[in-house]
Length: 329
Image 1 (tube, rainbow, N blue to C red):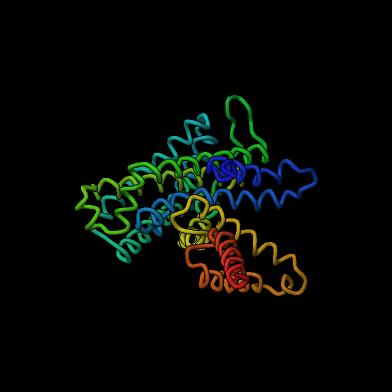
Image 2 (image 1 turned 60 degrees about the vertical axis):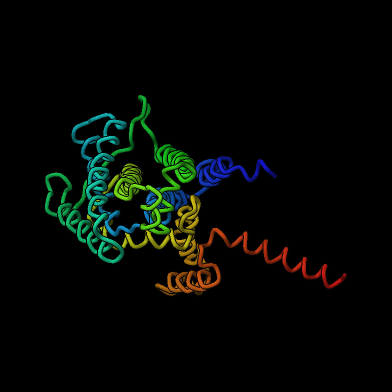
């Protein structure tokens, strides 16, 4: 039982579950593509969870950070023919610098004001994606290739495996972060800024750290996207994607490492599953409407997120059996 409760083992099992589409024979390519969408949004969602769930900050510009890293990585690997690892470092450094700037801005802005500021920043970047056609390809977008790592060029399944391994590593890193002094300072800052400052927490420093970490995760997600789908255009990196990232964190479970993964699986997988159902899948838009209604209903009864649903069911069963035993006595 103690082994099952080991968090690192749980994260590894998540990775194994995601690898099943490439390990099992006869799985359609569309399934791998769907799973890849879950993985790269889960990576970005982990970053949003550090920012929103643990630090109490909000950003509506992270989709643009993902796009910036995607364009950079595509340009550096295909046009300049730089090594993939070096390209990733450069591509992630750009949103990291922007995240530090936003972190500095966040010291003076809170709540809706911060959300609007980050939204505007993201829209500026998206407009630049359209105007800088020499770099981004404009509305036509830019193309990329499967990366070459240590002399081995990855296939589609190989790139997907790389993404899954990256997700597992990032989950472990976030777990370690949360249980460190830095994580405890972020949680204190989220609970009460005044109380955190009274305890000696440097709010400015930890806001910078939370924005920097979330920006790096967004950058990694963008790199994964462009090298898996091998094409990127401005229509992907809209404010809608940023809102979806926040939604999947809240739906999956804010301030939990697995919440972003659960939210990504539900938001991407459930609509596709319903599209295959008779009658429901034949009516355009109905699967998304039903999924939205189901999410609202679930969050009414489980406001902490879907990740707590199994625990809630187990607790209710234990409570019912406990009451039954008391009745027998």
